[in-house]
Length: 415
Image (tube, rainbow, N blue to C red):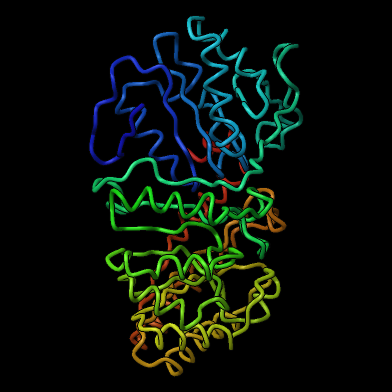
C-alpha cells in the first residue's frame, strides 16, 4: 500500500489493483479528477476495463450522499472504515483473479458496499426528482445500509511526514460525532452516535506510539473537549516528559475553554484556539441549536488570554435560515465586545455561507443568495476595526450545496 499527495506528481506503483479516496468535504472531488487524470485512469467507471484498478471511495461526504459521485467510483463504502475496510479487502481477495464484472457483483453482496453501476436510476423527468433506484440483477441488494462502528478505539495517523498539509503531525481521534447536534452539521448526524475513545486503552497508547516518531500531536474530533475524561487527558499531556510536545486541538466547545486548558495549550506551543460560534445573534444560535450565549463567548476569550494564548479564531456563517440583516450586525457587535473584554488578543472571524447537508434537519433549505452581500458587509466592518476576516467563497458554497444534495445528473447540468 502507498499514499499519494496531490501536489507532488508522484508515480503510482505499477499495476495497482485498487485505488482508494476518502472524502470529508464536497470540494475534495477536484482531487479525485486530478489524480485519476494523472494516473491515466478513465474518470468514469463505465469506461474502465479489466486492466484498470478498482476505484473505491469512502468518508463522511460519500456516506451522506454518494449519488453525485456515482459515475466516477467502481465501489463506494458507506459508513465507518473500521468495519468496512477489512470486509472490503476480504471479499475482494475471494475474487481477485476474476474479471471486473464478477468482482463488482461479488463485492455488492457485502453490507455497506455500494456498486453504483449495478443500479439503474429513473427520473420523473430529465430535470426532475428520482423516481426509482433499482438493482440491475436479482442478486444485488435493493438497499445498501451504512455501517456504524460501535467500538471505543478510534483512529490515529498511519503516516507522519513533512510532505503532509500539517507537516510531521500525529493525529489522534478523540471523539466521533458531536453531542450538540447543531441542525446544519453533517459531522454530527452522519456519524451518529457520539463516541469517545477509551483514555487508558486507546488514547494514551496511541499518543505514546505517535510521540516516538514526532513531537507534534493533534487531537481530532468535532467536539474534542467534550470527551468525558478530557481533563485527565490534559493532565497526562502536562507531564514534564512531554514538555517539548507541540499540541494542537481541533475546534473546541466555547464553554469548555478554561484558563487551565489555555495554559496547557500555551505551554505546549499552541498560540491560538478555534471556536465555532456560527453567529453573534443569540436568536440564530437558538434556531441552529447552538447551545451558547454571548457571555460564554466573552468568558472563553478572557480565559484564553489569561492562560497565555495569543489569538482566537471564530467560525461563523451567514445565510442561516431565519437570518435577518440585524443578525449580521449582532455578529459585528459580538466581535467588538470580545475585543473590549480581552484587549490584545488577536481575533479572526472565518465565515462561510450556510450549505444544506443531507440527513441534517436543515437539508431542505437552500443557499441564501443574500449571503454574498452579507459576507462583503462583514469584511468591510470588521477589517475597518482592525480585525482579521476570512470569508469562504459564496460561489463555491453554491457548488457544495449542489454536491451535498444532488444526484447522478447534477454535475452534468452544472458542467
